[in-house]
Image (cartoon, rainbow, N blue to C red; front, side):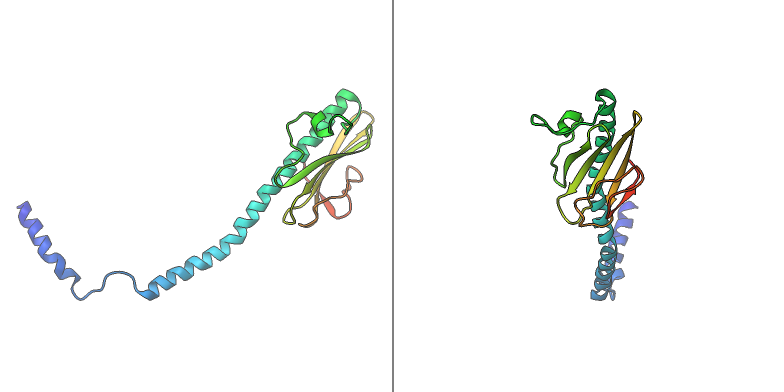
Length: 176
């Protein structure tokens, strides 16, 4: 019985394909290629923007860490960390942040060691924005602010002028 069924199936198989073409036509293939092209042109800019955001998040995280480390350093030493002959302020903070990465260069600008310090992230290419973090001391308390350049291509951000005001060409962003 089983052999007979298989034999009948094999005899019908060639008859089913008679008169019909199998495979894809050229028009069907072109339609699929056009649809894939349209979808990729829609998705590609979004994908590239996400890559830029990921590179920028490095600097926001590091500036936030530098701000917190400066606050901690201030509570221990009654002044902010600053560069000297033997070490940089970033080394003094001892938080493991490199001052030179693939996308950014980090440095500390100490205005008045007991009043204000600025932590800066200078972008190495024009696709990224620069960042600056400020830590201010008043009556033994410290507060911080983070500023982002208004547009890509502004690699060096001006220092924040106060806890509520960023320098010219930048705006305040939430602390990381």
